[in-house]
Length: 108
Image 1 (cartoon, rainbow, N blue to C red):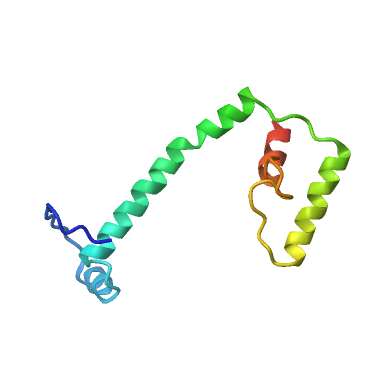
Image 2: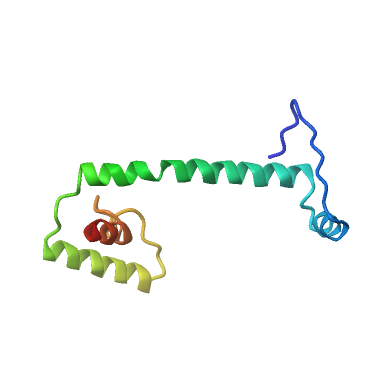
């Protein structure tokens, strides 16, 4: 989304070959530059928020799962994989943590 409001102009100096390559790939277009900067900012914000879920998990660990619940999650995951359905949230639609998060929590 190109912002057409108030703008600021910056100048960069690049070697000719890199400048030509960037221009050919449309990397120097305002829309592209804006998209790259927005993605970089969003990534930085997500990285800053990473410790929060981990701290919450440590402070409020989920209830331990029974062997039957674990088996049900495994079977649901296998079913989703075999039907090419991506798992969402808890693997079997439960409130349980996704398996990678669960395994990471158990290793701590």
